[in-house]
Length: 343
Ligand code: OGA
Ligand code: NI
Image 1 (spheres, rainbow, N blue to C red):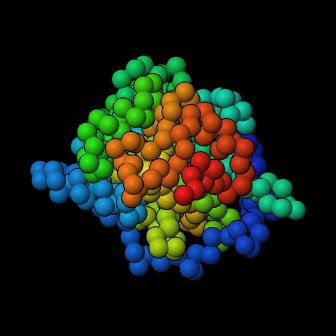
Image 2 (cartoon, rainbow, N blue to C red; image 1 turned 90 degrees about the vertical axis):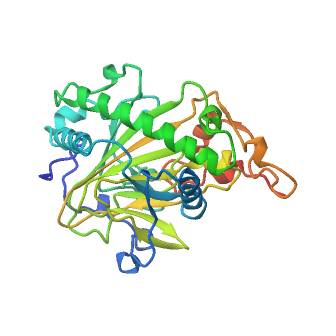
């Protein structure tokens, strides 16, 4: 897929100006990234349900990340959604600039990540992000851009598929915890906040000096990410080391996010990850997030608490969690930690 580097919507020139250059201690140190370990790839077309549940729960416990193949989402649809997003990021910058905002309450927006660095202020990340809500069954087209013209149709079809896939994953993950199939979905609650965040990383003259997305944990409950084939960028921490998540053909990357870690009372792990840039090629990633709504109360599921496993987190509303998240803006956020209980 051709992805010519264009201008960011915010008109920052695509050259490695000091705006983008991280201080040494914040740089990715790519020479220390090894593919010695990797997250598992799980075949969802497995009729031995106990085996499938156990593979998924082990992956959630050990890595917090896994890839899935034979997931049932048509390849051609995944290609179409990546193509329409590529087109979106290739629109003239002024066309995307209509969505530029730093206002958190806006549901549809284009923005650039940054890190706050002492003495240097905000250092921009080498990427642009477009976020908007989606829904597997309700009409959400009014949130979607009119341009490219096929965006609405393609994304609606994709949302339906990812919604069904997420239901299946939540059911398998619930069973992995020894819970009723619908337990996690019920706990994440009514009217979930579901949104996507397409990330576009243009080729970067020196990936050692900057980052596409700083190290973070996802704050939602569950994430299903589609990434372009043939371009690496996503990295996760395994045993304290950064490890690349190499694109597997026709796979999705699935990860446990913070709310799932809390609900599972720490059994499933929401793991630190980041995106680095690529010298030669542009990269596109499309995570689909599934989160509780603001009023939902989240806390460890009662069935997972006993004398040996006391609650690791206090109960809170998702609004409280989000407020803490925004309070830590620009820093290496440690949001989960703010809700931990000491024993
Ligand atoms: C994210 C994320 C990784 C990537 O958007 O939360 O982790 O590969 N993206 O772009
Ligand atoms: Ni993430």
